[in-house]
Structures are given as C-alpha cells and as structure tokens.
Image 1 (cartoon, rainbow, N blue to C red):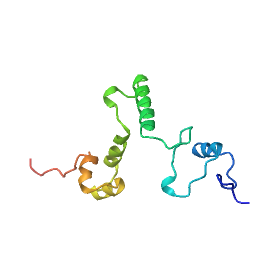
Image 2 (cartoon, rainbow, N blue to C red):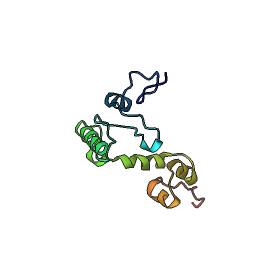
Image 3 (spheres, rainbow, N blue to C red):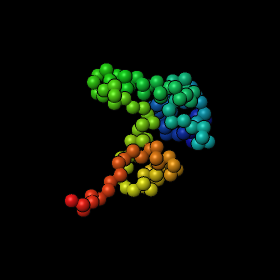
Image 4 (tube, one colour):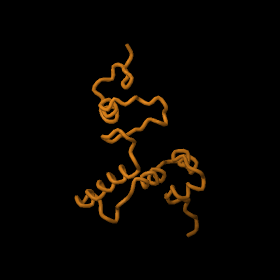
Amino acid sequence: MAGSWYQPSGQKGRHGSFAVIERRQQPLQLRLEARFLFLPEDGEPLTKDGPDSAWQRLIKASIRDGVISDEQRFNLHDLKRQGGTDTEGNVADKQTALGVSPAMMKVYDLSVPRVKPSDVT
C-alpha cells in the first residue's frame, strides 16, 4: 500500500519538520502554500519572532566569543543586501539574482561603481 495518511511510503525515520508531523500524526499538506520549511516542536508554523530570536542569540554569542565585534553586528535581512552586492555582473544580473525592482536595487546594491581611470596627468 502507498503511505499512511500522514506519511508517504518508504519515508521512515524522518528528521526535522517531518518528524514533528509524524509524531503528531498531522496530515502532510498537499497545497504548497500550506507547507512550511521549519516547524517548532509543537508542529505549528513558526512566527517571525522565532527565527529573529534565534538569530539575536547567535549574534550575541558571536560578539561574546569575539567572532565579530559589536560594530559588525548584522541582521538576517543584511544577508540579502550583501548577496546583492557580492553578485558578479552588471546591475541587471544583480537585480535578477535578488528578484527586486529597479528602485529597490538602490537599497540592495551597495557596491562601489568601477570607472576607468582618466588619461589626465
């Protein structure tokens, strides 16, 4: 027989979110928008506060352990900005990689424009 109503066949010993679904005997959602990448132990979708709190604990521990300084503190959204800045190519390539509008590129792309040196001596 195929899988049970909450677990596809051949998927024993799941980890992470699937383990929570299995343990709570929740149905595996068929609609993509009803599936969540991460689930806490209670099996409910994460709120924005969960990852934000975990991130802040990570940053505070990094500062305490000397991995980064307080001035180097950054948030999760800064990772997207840095990714846009570090993407090689022209502005259109960076915009495609970030999936943002031309107006938002001014926010995300912090790279310094490169210009050819002048011939003036």
